[in-house]
Length: 208
Image 1 (tube, rainbow, N blue to C red):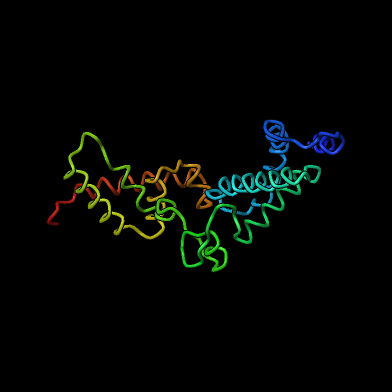
Image 2 (image 1 turned 135 degrees about the vertical axis):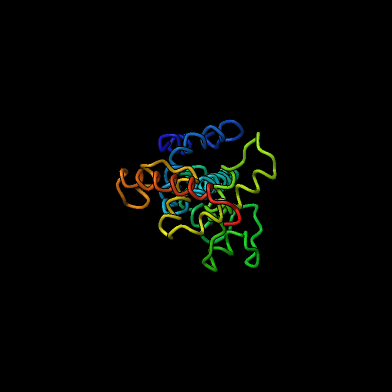
């Protein structure tokens, strides 16, 4: 990559253009992505891929401008990546109009120190509802099951309710054990208790 930049400096007709410019940038791309990944290592995983892609886009725009001015010798991957990261941090992404009054604007989120997350990531209680759906069940059956499940959850102790929601959302025994910092055996025991409790709840008459 650095050798490529040196080659651009050395020749009389070293200014890349067209396919040559694209090939030169492709050689620098892995290094740019590594710098971007390190620069945004603390960003939420859901945002990290998009941020790295934005760095690549910003770096390419900067590279193209250098090529157009005949200054391709200044195009080093680390410099391009760091320049792009600074622009993103300042809310100056290429081709994006930023509005600090728009809650979905990255600039507004950075300046006012808040974050917007997908509903499914912050509402774990809703995940179990999808698990209750069955193509063989009628809408009435699904609605009744959701109502019963909510009532059952409300009758549980807070800790057992949290465990039940994690397991209902799809956590394995080991995953739940890691989350609650318990042994897998204890989670298995709680799973059996919850199963017995649910069975007993269903056997109680509706008017009881």
